Image (cartoon, rainbow, N blue to C red; front, side, top):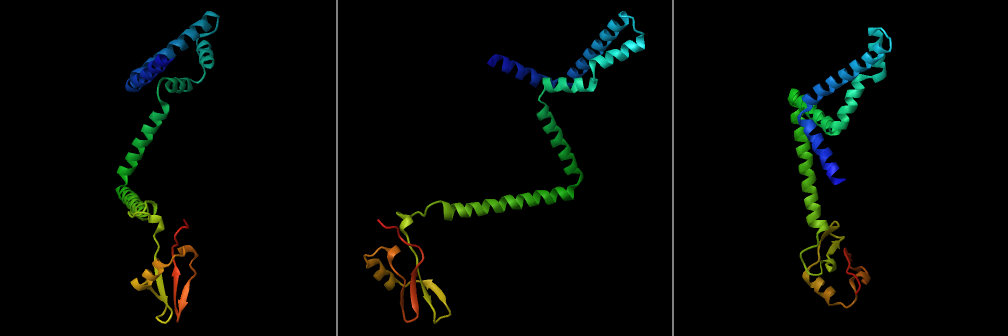
Length: 190
């Protein structure tokens, strides 16, 4: 079974390389079958033109027979793909302005996509290069008197929060005199 597969594969590859010869052989074979059928019809008592016409009707559409034979012998899908690639290349070579625009658009799109994915991969998907990175938290101070300006909490406040024994996720927001400290990202409970 495997040997038959490779044998058929080899014949198909060989037919791709010798396509013109195979087309000539196929045409000769079809003409031979047509002549033999017409000769058989003449032997049955038909006139020569009528015998040839009856032979063509019996064999059917010769172009369809040729195309079906080619599909059996070769890789029709690969040939169609190769023809499409050649046609596309000819069209792109003919209209250089469109080609330049299309290539630049693709390059810009691929470059932007790569840059955005690299950023997301580095900062969102991959963990931070710290031990227990999932336990990191950031505290911001929000001063209502200074037009709602946010900045990170100063070190004294952070040290007092870190000395506290209550888990960060259960610590309520703290507020005094117009300044409130709220938790942006909490720590998981252990």
